[in-house]
Amino acid sequence: MIVCIANQKGGVGKTTLATNLAVALSKKGDTVLVDADDQQSAVKWSKRRTENLIDTEHHKGDLKKVLIDLQKKYKYVVLDVAGRDSEEFRSALQVADKLIVPTQPSQADVEVLPFVLKMFNTFQKVNEKLEPFIVVNKAPSNSKSTEVADSIELLQTLPKFKILNTVIRDRKQFRDASVQGLSVLEMGSSKAKDEFNEFLVEIL
Ligand SMILES: Nc1ncnc2c1ncn2[C@@H]1O[C@H](COP(=O)(O)OP(=O)(O)OP(=O)(O)O)[C@@H](O)[C@H]1O
Ligand SMILES: [Mg+2]
Image (cartoon, rainbow, N blue to C red; front, side):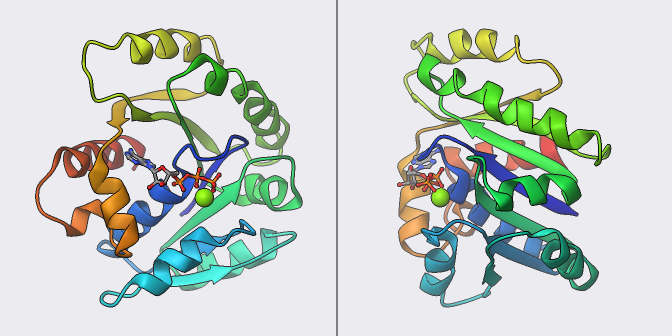
């Protein structure tokens, strides 16, 4: 299974979801984390790990052959890719099984999503199995905020994408885990862990 995590927008949690997902999936079967972003944040995260190492590779350019070859060797291929219009993103959409788009719950973030939707529409024609998901990430933990409800209403106007019921909130534990090269799943119990587990159930 090839899971592509992408969004044109920066800082929305692509690498956070990719690294946490790689750890979660590695417990179910051989998993490789592919970092197709020049910043190589996932590679850097992986180098901070000291135990239960996750195979992590940086690749550039056309990823079709790379991903198909990795899929022969690994049960799960998790891809972190900057979702701007790039050869990496375009090629990944041609072979991936799932496209997960994290977004923050603000109008400015939601407004850039039609670009990803357009890319998805282009490549779903050649890759019919591709399933697209949107997950709200870094939502304010203050439950009184109406930002999440407002942005979900906006997201629902985007056709085809499945909007996950799970809302991942801004939880310090995600940042703490990243600093140590960990997943929140490898730390003590927390709301971050519960939310991430809920997210997993919805996408698998
Ligand atoms: N749910 C969350 N709660 C708290 N912090 C988060 C959460 N998700 C991501 N972060 C933090 O937000 C910052 C940006 O996240 P991340 O690097 O995963 O985003 P990105 O989309 O990969 O960014 P870039 O576009 O730069 O690659 C990081 O410091 C990360 O630890
Ligand atoms: Mg990143």
